[in-house]
Amino acid sequence: MNTKLLFAGLALSASWAGAASAQDCMLRVTTWGGSYQATYESVAEAFEKANNCRIEWVVGSSPDHLIKARLGQVDVVTNTLLNSIAGEKEGLWAPLDPQKIPNMANLYDNAVYSDHTIFANVGDYVLAYNTEQISEPPTSWDALWNPDYRSAAVIYGIDHIPTLSLTVMEAEQNGGGIDNIEPGLDRMAELFKSGNLIGALDVESQMVSLFETGDAWIGMLATGRMRDLLSKGAENIAFVRPEEGTFPLISTINIHKDATDPDMAAKFVDYVLSPEVQVAFATRNLYAPTVKNAEVPEDTPYRDLLVMGDAFERLYLPDQEKITANKADWQQQLNQKIGR
Image 1 (cartoon, helix red, strand yellow):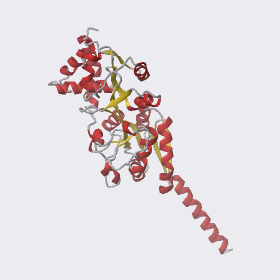
Image 2 (cartoon, helix red, strand yellow):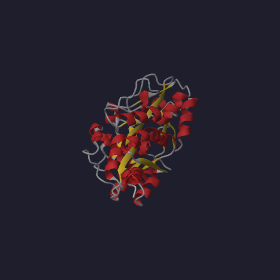
Image 3 (cartoon, helix red, strand yellow):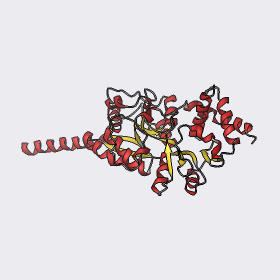
Image 4 (cartoon, helix red, strand yellow):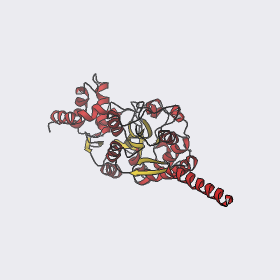
């Protein structure tokens, strides 16, 4: 027997076995398509090389991600907060171990929803206003009720999270709260009856158009839509983050309880919380970092639209489960109060 050929064959077999083993490492991560997936893919290559593990993107809508999790077809789940809450109630997620995810130490306190769910990145709803009609920047959401803005204000429909959150906020400021919503509904009824509202709209593009035409002087807008206005050259539209705080748009991240490689999944979550990945989403997607040590370059276009620092800590997030459970009833009560 040719022992050199035997050893060469064994070495080659070991090499193939090692390569196959490396290729066997695969992490299934949910994402939405479009620009979010594009940013994820742009940063994933470095993770794959560093950990010798391939990312398989599970692309779909937020409800799809939850369904895939129920079927055990994912390892790391990027989703909306409401779907993460639903998955947590169903026992789908593993606890997030700060020892295995050291970048969790850099999270804003309010970016940790629970032991199982944290925020990956965040946008928010700001108060936009027409500087040609409103010379002094408003400081409070109460500006929507200002009698000077008759037929000039716009908000989202009553079943949308920012308007529901505003309703809870108004309840709290007027002797009630999420479990005693009547004062908030009374306050919203005042707004509807005041004549200030052009509308409570479901389509954001309509809201943007009203600001463009000058019909809307003041109203809620997501930061992404605010960027659309500014990018179109709307120099007469500015925004503020009121002193009571703004209403967040949240992307969450979870690890499935039956992840094929829990340690690798934890490494990926840690990577998502790294400054380089957080900054990538900030500069490419205008999604604000949820860690305090991510330094977004000063020359980032529309950087001031990112909710950071004190503004992040003032994000107003009432109990999402209670809002979801009660919104239909609240809408019915409001309709009765305004005579619909």
